[in-house]
Length: 104
Image 1 (spheres, helix red, strand yellow):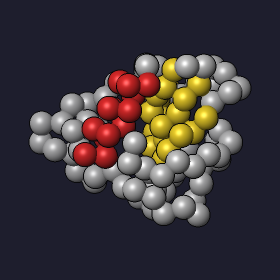
Image 2 (tube, rainbow, N blue to C red):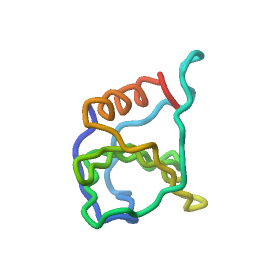
Image 3 (tube, rainbow, N blue to C red):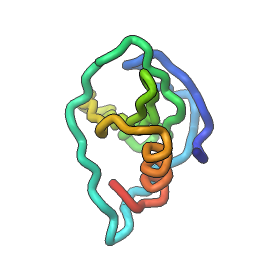
C-alpha cells in the first residue's frame, strides 16, 4: 500500500491528515466497483490506510477478522458504502487500482 497507515475509531474520519488522493476522474476503461451500504459486522475493524478528506469523499482500507474491504464515505451526506469482504492480497490490489484510476 502506498498510503500512509493511520487508524481512527469507526465513524470518525481523520481530517487533520492530508493524505493521498484518489483521482478525480478514473481511467476511461476503469472498472466500476460494486458498492453496498456500509454495515458494522464486527467491533474489531482496523483502518489500515485512508485517502485525503479534502475532496469530500474519503476512502478507507479496512481490515477485520482476517478480511479486508474498502469503505467510501461521502462527507456532505454521511453516506457510507463498502466493497465486498476479501482476502488481503486482492484488497491491496484493489486499493492500489483505486489510486491509479483503474477502478472507481
